[in-house]
Amino acid sequence: MINRLAKIQLGNGALPRDCLITDISTGGVRLHVEGYEVPDDFVLLLCGDDLAKECNYQVVWRLGHEIGARFVGPVRRSGLGARG
View 1 (cartoon, one colour):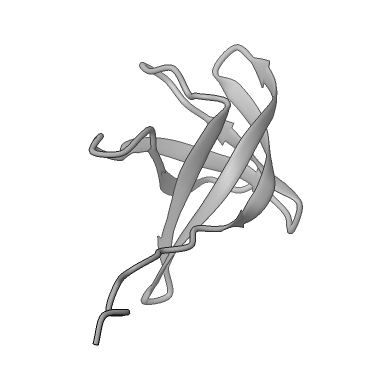
View 2 (view 1 turned 90 degrees about the vertical axis):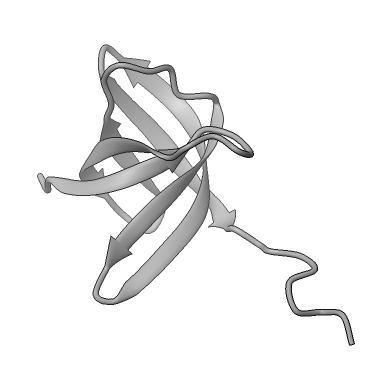
């Protein structure tokens, strides 16, 4: 079991909310969240080692304050710096 702070991006324009990663693997995460509803699809913001990572996840189970979500893929940013 790990306890690593992360943030969940709930939607465009919404401020990221704090959560706690209690388990992580290449296939998914187990999160502890309190005080807000997590949508079925969300972006998890991982920070650490001078690197910020944004990845898409999809909820596969919910149990009280615990959520299990599978890794969908990295967040793809479109249009940034693409104009000439």
